[in-house]
Each structure stands twice: as structure tokens, then as C-alpha cells.
Length: 157
Image (cartoon, rainbow, N blue to C red; front, top):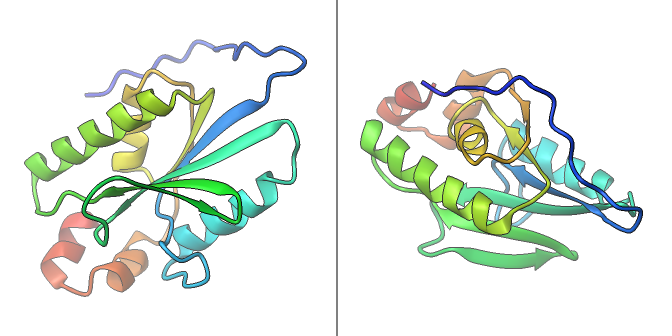
């Protein structure tokens, strides 16, 4: 069980320090080809947040299409795609979470904004980095689009 520290945390900032925010959640390889609601939210949110000069935004996402960690600049936005560990069950979840935690700690942002109350949120909370969570809603519809296979859809729902 994950222990959540409910004490307020202060993010140290100086007048010249940009707040480094890591957005963790589903982000498409091509932001012009969005396949789900969470992807749409993150694409549009990152576009909007980049308008604030005191924020430095990066994205971390899992993708079954990549075989090794990949960093790309998408219209100047750093996007990190990690390979999604394939399979079902607790081993898949553990390996994916461990991979995300390590990558989050390596990037060392001031704040993680995790999307979806699943592996992204769990990894962010375990990273030791202050975390904001946006749990998204209609999971069964998202899964029907992302995972047409009934068994996988049932597992992820």
C-alpha cells in the first residue's frame, strides 16, 4: 500500500527559478493524431502551460510503439516516451512502475502532474517528488479505444 504524506511541501524557488513540471500520462507519438481523451487533455494542457514564462514543461509517457526510451522535441516541448512493458498482471505493473519511478527521479522535476489514477499516479507518489493528480473519468471508453482486445481492456479497466 502506498503511504501518502499529507503535510504541505514547499517547492524551493528563487526569483529566477522556473518551476519544472513533468506531465506524466498518455501522450501520442504524433500530437496531431490523438486517440483518446487523456491524450487530448495532455496535448492541449501542455500547449497552454507553455505560454507561462515561469514554467518549464516536459512530458513522460508510456508507448507500446517504442522499443527503448526516446526523447523528442515536439514544437519545442521535450517529450519522453518509454516502452510500455508488455503483459498482464502484477509483474507488468511492478516493472512499469519501477521504470517510471526511476525515470521521474532522473528527470528530477519540481512537480509531477500525473494523469489517470493508475501506474502514472502510483509511480509519481513513490518517486518522492511533489505530485498533483488528475484522475480521468470514463475509463471503460478509453480502454475500448486503446485496447480492442477484451481481455486487456478488462484488465486495465
